[in-house]
Image (cartoon, rainbow, N blue to C red):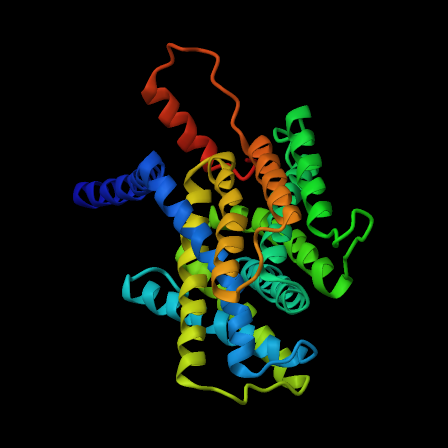
Length: 349
């Protein structure tokens, strides 16, 4: 009996120690900066990559079913790769309750399937530069939703000012050649903004789900399920990928790896850090997106409206996600680290 008690105490100690080690590891400032920047660079590169994929596969702007298939293969492959890696790492893949399964299906349906239906269609009807700027409204939607969901995350004057700046940036990027020439279509720019709203809502839900299961397993299942939904809808609507070549296959593989790596790392950072510390890096997505779209797609980034919109959006995101400064100058660093780790584990962030 005494030996059994010792073994039980050791296993309990290991289980309680592992989250602390993970929290300390993923809370390191240099690692946080490196991983968050990597995620934003990967997401920024997806804008030109998807448009190049349309061209390689011969998908026209009106061929919505084929776009769904293209997106479906990307996320199904990404989810399968993550689940295989999780199995090799001996993570609990099948230790799911009915509630867990339902949560994963809902997360995959919203964050992957529904969001990317709007994103892929919208991207075909607007430029990569515009898309990357408009999609950054995810941060502002998250702030607004958090105001109504969490008691300790209400909108402050600083956050309100940031949201207004971001909205101004979205308006500026849609101006045409003249000051009163406003260009905005529901199927193009509108769908990109809708995708941003869906992503922000699903991300808040995903943070709560991640507190109950392994992040890699959660991401693998939600990407895989969302990918299957997109594939089913695409083929049922008559879509197909006809011009499959080694180049298009390589691009699809890159997009799948991009999704697997970026979503897993970002979920880990959100799980073990306060939301504000992570989301502040979102301003890098339109920076990478506009730069890479200009390089890869020969789009004009130097238009005044793109530059002004980029400055407004980035300034707004910085205001919204800027953490308040600690008043006490003599606080204990160990207490600060412990407080950050504990607050990172709360869904209310």
